[in-house]
Image (tube, rainbow, N blue to C red; front, side, top):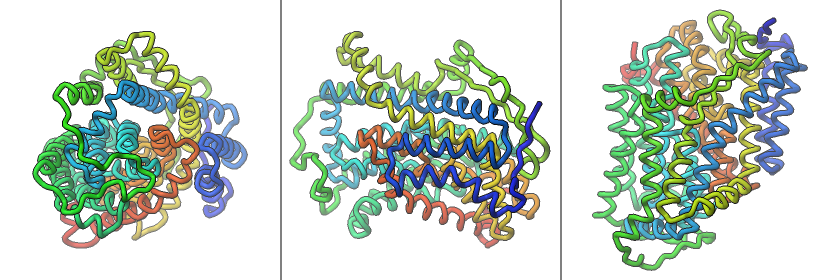
Length: 547
């Protein structure tokens, strides 16, 4: 027998919304205000979500616990699996001394910390977001930045801020593909619309990133490099998304940006080099970098080149489909699968929610990263026994991070299947003429809740389309705004913060990271909301709208 979601269980929309927000308030409050360890805050938030779902929203207790288990499984696979294997690869390179050589090679391109940040966090991180997504770019770039001598808070927070503009086209366009699937809108129209919103912010983010690191005056000193990084990313992003589709918009733009920025930095230097004096906690060397041999460079960069190639290959749809065919196992959760019904006005008609754990172990991005780590380890002359011991050390080190991510995803699934998320979403949908702004903020909330632009689009895409139709707005505009607004929520979602704290070995400081990035996330989301509002009502911005 099925259960139908109820979005106003207290017969008062205001109080129902307050109750629905309790788990998120407890989670974020525990992190940011009470300074609880991340796994403790996550478990408390999960407990609040289950209790709210059962006692306030009337979800059967058995369904609530099954949902929590399903979410925990998805937290470990694929998210936790990615974290574990990226840190494993990083540990191998550190143990062999190759990471230090890579660090020295980067200082050979530029000794300026602002430009190192720009190259690694923005351009290099965008490639991993475009190819793999799901926390990979933050894990990789935060680990590299901490190795370059950035303070843990800066390495974590700045990696999160940089991982915004590429997110909507991450994992080879997966968020847009999912958005088209749940809305029935044309995938190329959605891609084109998102590609008319995000490039403006792709130009802005490099400036914002360096400003957040060292202030406005020092940001102005490197403005030519910021322009090169932003323009070389934004222009390909616009062209590919509008004239090809969403699949290569992230990867293509990132490759162009990396190449353009490296070539520019080999010819241009700022008048003032910003070294370690800008960060008292840094331990990087400011002296002139030693001359590295070609062999040293090849060995140092080999693991990351192997990682880039394999992660890209794992993301190619045809190869992914081949791996799925060899390995995929689907587990339909009994007592939950297609027994929870989403109801109008969130969807057009009663819709059964599938509850299937898809364990495609070969095609997981984390499996590709594991393969890259093993191949790189063997090429670095690790014996199988040493690799196994190193893996055990890494697993022990990230055990609490894995628990945290499992609890975070568990919380997100409970809020989704119980209808708590829809209650929050409907509060945004009641804003009338201001809906273009608040609908964009709804996408931001969706990613903050779920940790994924794809999940946010699945969650709220249909609601955006329905509400836009009721208000006389373009459904393509508002569905796209959900994805574009969502990218700004990526930096404050709990799982991304845990990934960053794990990569920088700054355990227990997740609340500090959240406080560091929260203003930036909210401000950029509000700017995106204002941009969508202008698209909806104000000429010439309305000319950007697909109708």
